[in-house]
Length: 357
Image 1 (cartoon, rainbow, N blue to C red):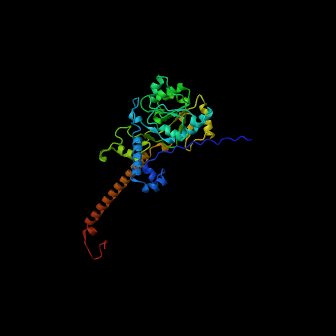
Image 2: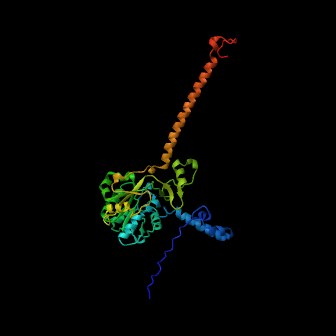
Image 3: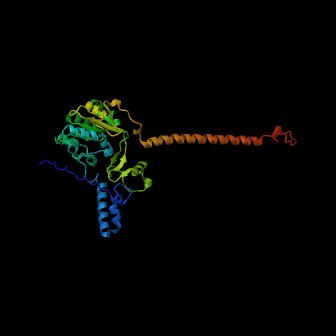
């Protein structure tokens, strides 16, 4: 009798919610051909039920950032959630950490102590990391109460205002767990950071990360009113909205601070990345020292580049027009002077002596 292993358990993939408009639009990734084909045959009652459910779901998404009060004071400019791309960049490192502690990515305990609207959980779940703790709690009160949740890795994009980053670095230095911190360039150059930089290595992306502010978490966003009264910044924000994520922005170029100590020496992880035993996504680079980071020109905002180029083009166009205007003025004066000048020294002879005839 031969032993037969049971087939591996199949975990049903969670179906991502999509709006009714997306499901009925053949140009959208969430297009539902079956729903589209049957829509005309549905009764008015059934259509009303589906539309009502859709509106409730949309309203829940729009209010997810304001549906409950946060138990801590927060600067409105700190209400930004990280792009899924940033998490995809460090996913191979998280997977390797999971292997080293003898667990799976889905069971790796990830702790994000700073709460905004909880989208980090969804992004990491999609990458296979299903054990993520990110709750609306006051991180510093949790520390004082001695209630920091059990975790294998601390991963966060901390608030950039005040002394949050300094306090976070101090906590990580005493936590003895791997830490992955997404930090803007200008903060990484602060004087207090120099005391901790030797504990980290650094991962830079090929392009600037985008961040998302959930609807309602910043004043003057999403308010109805006369378009003429809206500032240019508000009008621009309307061009980069996503129902699931909020308003897109990219205020700072940023990169990852990564510490795998004491589980793994940082230099070993860097070596594994360089030998591609840990394979990062294309465009990502790691640096042992912060001074060695080489910023790509693509970190500059595309709009800044376009503005600079358009400014140069405008100046060149103005100079060209000014030159043409001066040329036309000189030509006009020359023509007028020729018309007024006496022919052949004042003699209007027609006998052939005038050299102009």
